Image 1: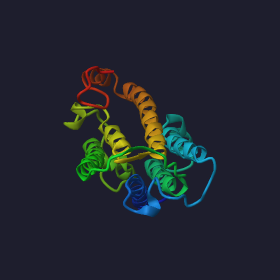
Image 2 (image 1 turned 180 degrees about the vertical axis):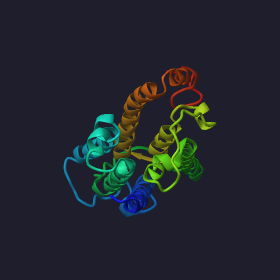
Image 3 (image 1 turned 120 degrees about the vertical axis):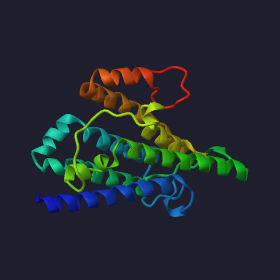
Image 4 (image 1 turned 90 degrees about the vertical axis):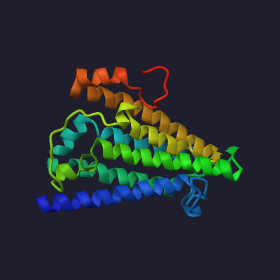
Length: 240
């Protein structure tokens, strides 16, 4: 691939990822009936829990496998190194986009907040989760996470271990935001609970492997940081 093609693909990957994130956000909000997690399925499959489980596994495998060093080494032999991150970002967008269209509704009610003030409060929490995720991405290095530095869209710089204000409160604010987005709903159905539970489990497992990689990369700096700062919630009484 030529440098211009790599840069163009980085932009395409960003658009695909943005579309995937937006579709997932709408999927978790009852704003567009045809995209809601509790809406009738576009393609009906049975039993509903099985395709739903497979969708979460697909999401987890894509995010986990493509982040592993052995996979990066394998794909690095087939595409330019500068395009590796863009491929990951593009694949993430595709997977996120698939979930709302293949999800099977499971609509038995677990909780249902009827009071308008309660609903508004929960939607505010949902919005805070989205904003926290975005702020955490920017605080780390948004250009690196979306592959623009690697693709040469913006100037590259060496990877260093840095602690933003957010990362001095919790080690993984992106995941904190995602957990809030998954659980903050006034209309919790068994399907939404299934989705939120499995995503939370995946996030916790993913943190384990991500921190192993960070310890190998940054050594004692990250070990000390891990002892000083809680994992997900700043009010944790016990730091893992």
